[in-house]
Length: 332
Length: 254
Image 1 (tube, each protein chain N blue to C red):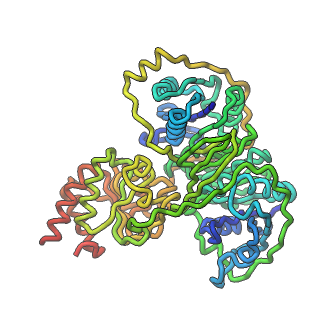
Image 2 (image 1 turned 60 degrees about the vertical axis):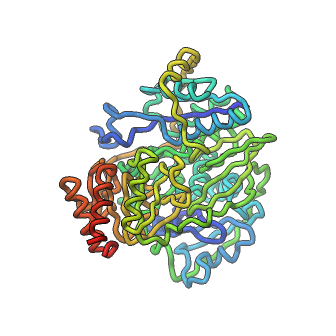
Image 3 (image 1 turned 90 degrees about the vertical axis):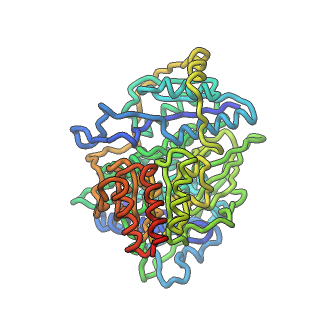
């Protein structure tokens, strides 16, 4: 097995995802322990331009020692089966020490399938990696952010899917363009998945990523009727209501108001989290918020680990009182 | 159409979780297990497909405390076959669980396997895509709508940032459900009792588990916050008053 750390560069419609830079930062940490190279792997079709200047024209490059570029018409758009076929050979031929993937709807799908196909171990929800003497360690964030699980990376080639938060994306960018090598693609036949079309996010609603005051509701709101409490507060405070996954899945808020991994990332002046526990897939979209205030009955909720202020009370009880106080302050 | 829904159980996050004496695992003594919520969405999506296009929904679950209730609830919603896998599955990792599900699913000859896209305690991968490989089927995850016609499924897949895509996959296939088209339906207790009378849970013993591909955890701990929130104490009025002060400090309220 070689000492190199591979990173699947994740991008969507020509835009390199931040998680790719997070992974490169993690890869650098590991490579210092293994004395190996950080190798970025980019799959695509007619995407040499992207491979050689992934952060297009920013004057910055991905902080990899080398880039491998695999070109094939079937790789023009992401599908898990084409990606898996293209990567399986590359991994088997090179047996890098570790291969990092985003813990996303792109990376996780590929990594999981490869784990089963190649019989390689897999670490999911990985938050951090570090070198401890001669041992490479992982730490994963599980159980909605309430538990960290730490262990040694297995000694065989290991696939890792990473969540953001443990490494800063800016540490995965560098000032030197890495050398790009084009690698021949294996035959990609018998593919069973195809992209028909992208569906654009619904336009017309407020853009929560631009709103300075966000009143966010989570599972703690309990019933659809109770959303009115958040609406009233938002109106009094001059803010907009948004929510976490469970509330949107219930159909209580439109998907345009979803904050989280599969929704929007937000950067308000104030993010008032009502009945939100703070699961990693929600929290990763909040990092740009100036001040987070959390209201949750569970004092051990992970949201209190990232909030500046918190109160362990029932939102259903405190929000009506708060709305009144805000109204009073406005009219005073 | 045969739709198989394998489900797994996870700790209820509402309950307090503690680490056991080994320091490397959750203390399971008082741990309350519930159905993985994404699997609950997978059951709902399966029932919706059955209602639209016919077929049979078969739910497969490992034997844990409370499994019978979950299976009968699925039957009350419209699942036709309930299969309980018996054996020492309490500590099975996801690779082992996926292999066990694959063996069970093969006998059921699925056209479609619907499964939750992930579970919050996944450590060695998600069950769905592992299962797909063991079955030799394609996998599409982060799915929030499914249509089936002519041996193909057209699905809506979610990408980061609110973008979605319409994808097509040839059947048989495994789909990782992020959210059903409608939230999981509520069933009244009387219907669950009826299902208990009308449906039999088929028990199937599993053979020796194969956990390869899994991980060894050396230590579990609760995350330490770099800077925990300043907690506002007191009655509702004083909390609300303090929050208004904070709003004013931040110039959100003039």
